[in-house]
Length: 134
Image: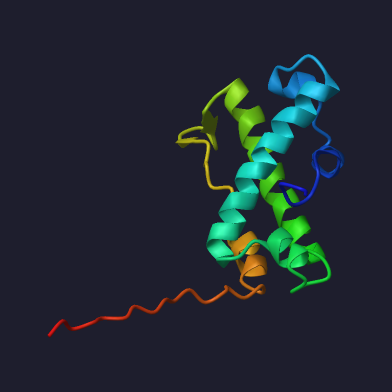
């Protein structure tokens, strides 16, 4: 069972990242790092939507993970790759002659949040029985 949405190869193609950009020695190391991030991103998406799309496919509730979820995961991971690359250089960015700011660490941009909101959250509620003893 896949443990993440999107793939390391898709993220690499989308970003054009090379192992050296992240201080790594090989493509295999790069793929392993990106897959680790994709596992974390899957968890964040699952928690946000209160569902696990892979589990829903296994249970027969869906025929496939929505392609848009894969795309969202790829874009979020691309943001992580960019942050990791920037942070290797410096955590401070000079915007103009006077303004200096820290690198923004948000990976879920407003556009990504908007796209994710198109996939409904699974309602979470529970029942509790209260029994009065006589």
